[in-house]
Image (tube, rainbow, N blue to C red):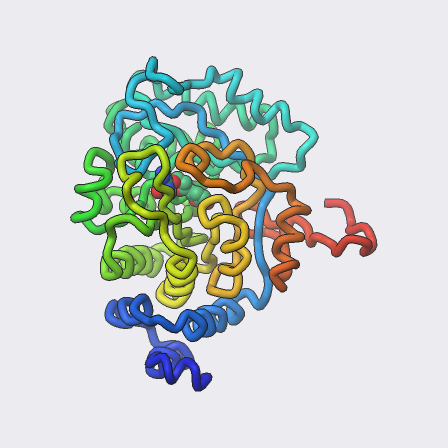
Length: 376
Ligand code: V47
């Protein structure tokens, strides 16, 4: 334990981590209150390296947002349109959605990540056929699709149970769930920023059911708006408790709030310090979730690199065609190449590994000029 960690008043927390003793709610709040970013980072980095050494994961993925028509009125959202005929509202035909994948036949993609608005008028068959068609285009592709909020909406709209919805989507090709829609679990915040969509208990129950059915899932936390530090820690502890039960979460993903073009635009974006703290505290509190992802589109590329020394071990992937953050003002590129991500990771002093969605290693990117790696 370094003198710096002691001087920052985190000596007892460091000792708990060394002993493998679980951190408490109060510990989490104290970590957020700590002003010594380097002390906090040192603790988080130690936990990161215990699990992954310098290894940093990313995948070759494609984002597909088939519709932005959405009946929910989340204050932070710049992507959704309430009415199908509103300016900039769109709904892809199934052929258009499948074409997004067809047109990338030359790319060695391993995942399509689908997130949509809650469209009031589409039939359930739109979603099952969407998945079936994507698998026809690329039989081996992993389909990480639909947030728990979408699953709840499908159940309510089409008169099914959450479990039926999951089973029918799995039969159509669903392989895992992304972590979107979690926002902040505290009911106080949810009432203010996203009162008309699935609540926290149901969100977590859907992930519980998904895990029981054999799906792996991710979980997110939208930070940097009206939430308190206590509410962030509470959010993390609700994730930790479910993970104790099921073990089904793969990654925790802090999502930095972007204020452009939405109803919370008067709020400032979270600072770099805050972003690094959130990733670090997540790594320290979530002792049972294997990966902490720095979603580079949300953090920006520079901070994503730094986050790799503050608890994060994953960068998501190439993404391509992302709309939710770009409509909310993210200045990042809309896509990265796999070699661009590998370069970024290496430049941060970490070791890039291309993974698939389930964290099997797909390739080990070589340094430029190194011998050509074996075929995939
Ligand atoms: O749930 C919407 C967030 C999420 C804004 O599972 C915003 O691997 C910031 O969940 N500013 C969707 N955030 C994206 C998501 C995600 C991203 C990367 C990886 C994974 C994964 C999941 O985007 C929404 C919401 O929390 N969001 N608007 C905004 N203005």
